[in-house]
Amino acid sequence: MVAMILCYCHENISEGIALLRLARKTGHMPSTYALALILRDSRHLESEYCLSLAAEKNYPPAWQEKLSATEMRDKFGIDL
Image 1 (cartoon, rainbow, N blue to C red):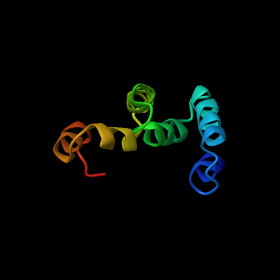
Image 2 (image 1 turned 60 degrees about the horizontal axis):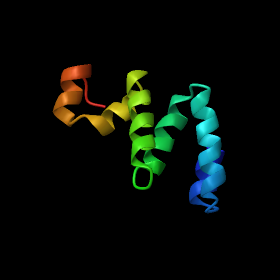
Image 3 (image 1 turned 45 degrees about the vertical axis):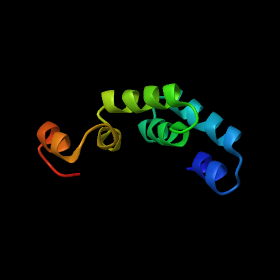
Image 4 (image 1 turned 90 degrees about the horizontal axis):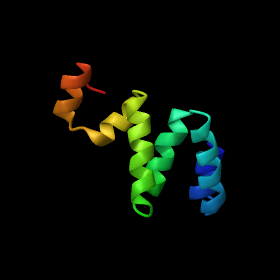
């Protein structure tokens, strides 16, 4: 959460991204997903890597980014 506040509220993007990358290395999927969203427009390859990593760990919000509503329903059997 601190990393997101740094990025969005204090415009300290480099520190916020550094914290999210550190959290990603520990396996924290919410941070991995947040990093994917923040980097989506500026560092596409790293963003896609983070999104795929979160999806591989079955983090539902990551799947929501990658799949359509129909595909989500087929994969998980529920609407998220």
